[in-house]
Length: 353
Image (cartoon, rainbow, N blue to C red; front, side, top):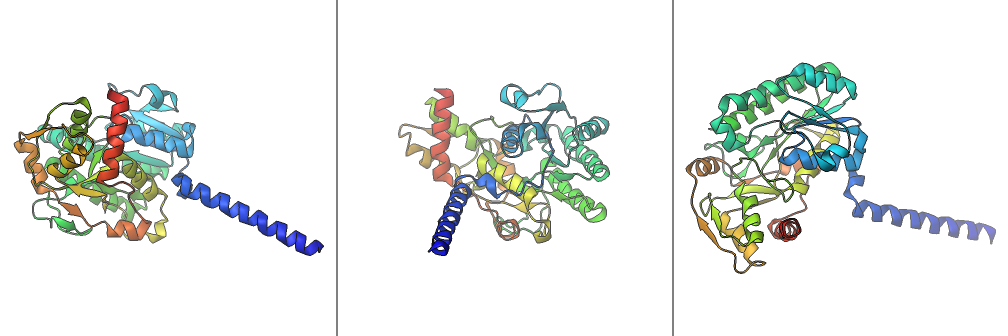
């Protein structure tokens, strides 16, 4: 009788522990991370991705373990400043970066410093200086201090001769913009440091990133953010991209998850390291307009095509094949156009109205 009571109690206890564990597992995706990263530096922390990535990393690894790197004129404020350490980190100044890495005992660097596609076309030398000369500095510091490095690539790394539908992981790239040229160079240089020096470099090819927190800053896919602002404000939207122009897009929560889960992935399972295709949704202007109109029936859109943006968009893929990311590190997005639209309209309504 005593043994029966003991085993029954034990089984009930184990059952409760398993149920509690599974509930936490599904409720909070942060439990999926292995916490390989300990002390993290985010260079470009006040940009569109960086400002949200810092907050997400701090929620997982602790505020004091994530340093918000910034440049003069783009200093962190509010929660970004108060939630943890920050330091001036100009990628063109290797001594400055090295000092921050040593001071905070950094083991992982998220290098997000770059000019976006449209801005870069007007400032090609500066785009190269930040994107490539800066990357070289980061990689050298990582080699000397045994840091892992994440430097995002982009769908902009592809060009007109790339297969546009279900673009393969490994295919011809040949971009026609300085932004794209710098992103291809980013992938190759990161691979070089990984193979020659053993630096743990990893990256994804981000599609257009859509966010309700930080406004976009000069990218070809910015229209897919601006259209939500116009809808919430009750304004007619003037679309700079022509109807029928498909491009891959991603909601910011998925972009953050991709950046973190890749850096936490088991390196023994990675066949590729840099330039992973990641996809969530692909749409053209009429489709996002129609989705918004389900919630805003009086919303209007007209076209005034920007030749520069349209030319860049036409050279990019319509849709990526991200099977390598799914197979090598279990990449899986959570948002599609429908669910993203609901959340964007809700969040922007709170923010603007």
